[in-house]
Picture 1 (cartoon, rainbow, N blue to C red):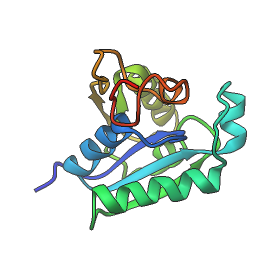
Picture 2 (tube, rainbow, N blue to C red):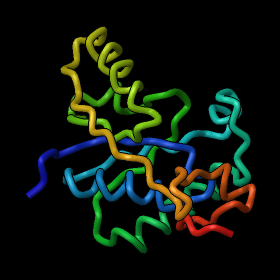
Picture 3 (cartoon, helix red, strand yellow):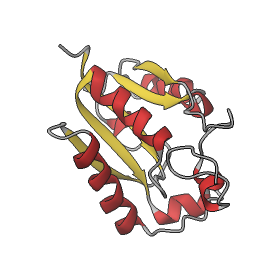
Length: 154
């Protein structure tokens, strides 16, 4: 039995890697449904990110990864044009699943929810997935051909 009915998480998901899968796995383990915010091309650019793949490609890649790794999971992918998307608007969202790197966003979300007279969400922090060299797995490292999407050294 799951702890929550609805949780949210988000990211750019440019190249879906082991760290992303851990974040998703944690969301699916604790909730009946997961809202996944997928950063729009415009918002990614605004945040200083330069994805290799456009939104549509990232959407399909994320969806394929979910179907392959988490079959029969209940989820919704929502376009993010800001830091929180539906997690701020949906009163039914009970928790935000974040990585250690983005844990501070939970406090920010709860301040916004309070301003909207919504109840706070629980913040679930997922440890960063580490590559074989003990450093964190990231899309940047994958793009630099330091590691593959599973964290193996190249």
